[in-house]
Length: 130
Image 1 (cartoon, rainbow, N blue to C red):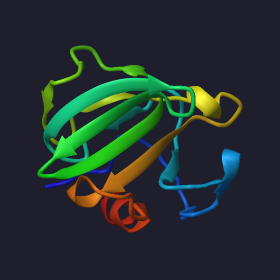
Image 2 (tube, rainbow, N blue to C red):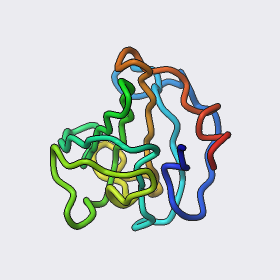
Image 3 (cartoon, rainbow, N blue to C red):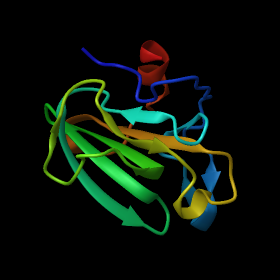
Image 4 (cartoon, helix red, strand yellow):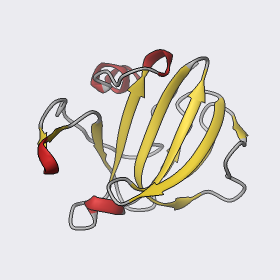
């Protein structure tokens, strides 16, 4: 049981490895959606909330040894805090453009880290779920 990490109208394309600021390669998929669209738990697990200059308002979801990273959120859902257990499809936060995405369209930057290791291209996963 997994669900699309964006609960609403969404579009995305495979931008894995595309150039980003600071010589980085893109390690996720940018899921374009209206600001405020719910970003939900792709599967059940535990959340850890952080913020950074790059990702803005972010959340990490740990589920069955895997890690999912949600960035550029507009804010967190009520009742969501670090260490909280969430169920599949539960709203974690809302699509936005915080961090280094402040001049871009609202989107969820979504990463998939199997086994908690390095990021892998999440496009096939979200293509199967959304």
